[in-house]
Length: 297
Ligand code: FE2
Image 1 (spheres, helix red, strand yellow):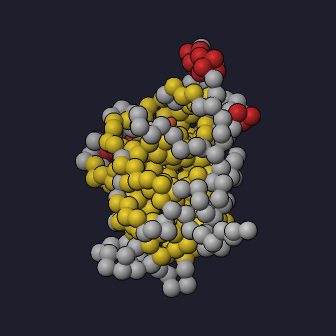
Image 2 (image 1 turned 30 degrees about the horizontal axis):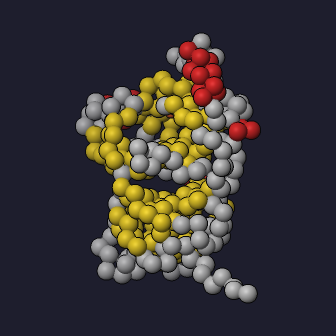
Image 3 (image 1 turned 60 degrees about the vertical axis):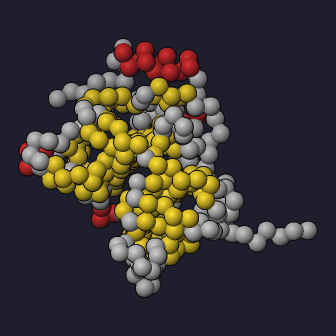
């Protein structure tokens, strides 16, 4: 009998971001989807907006658009974004706040820089992640979880060399307040030079890191991942390791995201992600006929 000894995952690949224009014309860095890498089950998209210093009047957002069949997770690192939707829901996301929106059967919403922020200009930095919903949840009523920065659990190692903000899942003894439909881990980690972390990630989860700032050493073989790169972990162990080299000039700031793959057919068309072509045609028709509602000013 052989006993598996390796617990640390290896790195399966490093994905570069592409720059693309979104919404009314703001620039994002996007590791996926792109033609060579369309999804990482159960994740459908990751966009990094900024960081960018905007002049007065320069900020742009994403005016009214629909979603069906998945979840959008918005995490504002700097700046102020406001949103409105067809259910009459409106809110403001400030630095550190998270909005976990389950679009389910459908919403029409707008995601815009706050009017006052746009007028004055300032620094904007945000992340949007799309999480697929399992077939049985695609048509559930829409739901929002809006978590202000002071309710996002934060934990540190004893020597304070690693800080984690726990958006989903659990890390360093802190447990997220957000509920997810399928098991998801979403951590914002900061490692000082010389720091390292071993994070449990159940073996059946797909896991990746996305580097926001600095450069990290990832996986059993300490592969390098830079600012704007996505590091894919192989599904070959129950732990991932991340380190910032001792001679690094700055802290390593990154997201560690993982989830149980759904293993279901994915048919996507813009803001609709379903299991069949027929369901996509239905979504387009429902949107055109106003069955996802519209925004009332
Ligand atoms: Fe949206």
